[in-house]
Length: 288
Image (cartoon, rainbow, N blue to C red; front, side, top):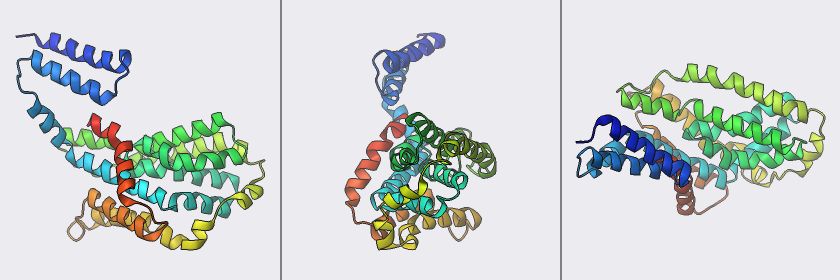
């Protein structure tokens, strides 16, 4: 029997070699390290442990997967771009408020999915050209998008590390909202003012507003386009405030929101959108 320390060194070595030397995905390297550790420890059938480990985090996996479906549908329906355009049109004369609100827009996908990648790929990709048009340098725009994406990942309602820790110690994911808000939103405001406001306040924002595309917003209207996002947040609040009446669970809430995005904005191939969402979420799901 190999000693526990030797098994530990073997697993860490295989994981590090896969990630850094061979440039494999973290999930694949972790999988091979787990299999090697099990075999070295005398477990001839490690598949059972992989299945049990996955189902230990099945709630988190379903939440991330359905949340990515919702955010991808929200983007494909044109609502995400319309939201950014509406914020700029309404607040372009107040650059400080404008940059803070656009930073919050970047954070929304990360807040809903628990993944910073979702923020960068969806709202970050939509807002980046707007930042450039307002006079921000590529470095400052990239820094603000990166910081907002990380803070969105940490902010409520979905925080994957907290959910994983709670699942590991059998503690419900309850009561994290206020601490996470205090950790993230003040920093987001500070980053918006530092990277955005000092660059944007002297730019020609009125000229940029005239160049924005409001066709989707004008065609469908703000109430209809943004109703899926409102529905998701309302159901989340009811799910926590009235658990005896509304016990839907976050995966079902996100699925209802994803279906509504197909009905309220531009028509898109909902199956193709769901497949793209799974491709984007796969690195995080693979780690779990």
